[in-house]
Image (tube, rainbow, N blue to C red):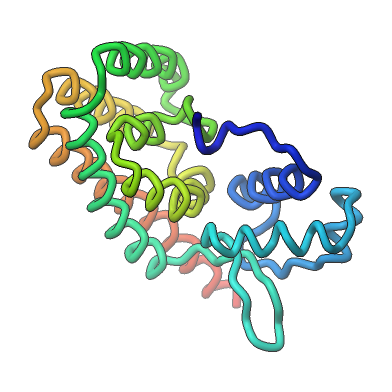
Length: 228
């Protein structure tokens, strides 16, 4: 069963998923303080339920606690991006290599079908938004690695923080078309069972994505300095 697509069974689960989505998509701003009282009113649940959700978000690396401040959404920064994407490049490169080895023919056919469904989204070259889970190209390849330790490190560890950078800074603009072409090349390498090429192309794709996001972050940081 997909890690992200399990049905929430408790009020705490539902609140956790809603809060996580709002943070990833920027509805709750990066760096903002999380008030249990305000969130309990917003989501119409108890403060205890909100507290549990915040604790779970901390393990997803989306929330951090600071002395005398409390829980805050993590900030998006150039330094944080580089550290995160260095890890992502290594682990997702490994996942692509393992996917080329371990994906079944049906898995690969499904991956090609997913990419075809994405092609319509990039025709205008303006946006390439992918929902979390099985409709996310990267998620599908991670699952396709069939390596449970690797899946746990990526999906349970850094996936949603990566998505936070991708969704808020990396899924729009001129990069859209080239990113989609890179996805196609990765799928072709996996289809050909070329493990070495699949890893190399994935690592290069993530490096290019990091450079694109870093440029946007540096521009944002520069604009903030000019206003201050």
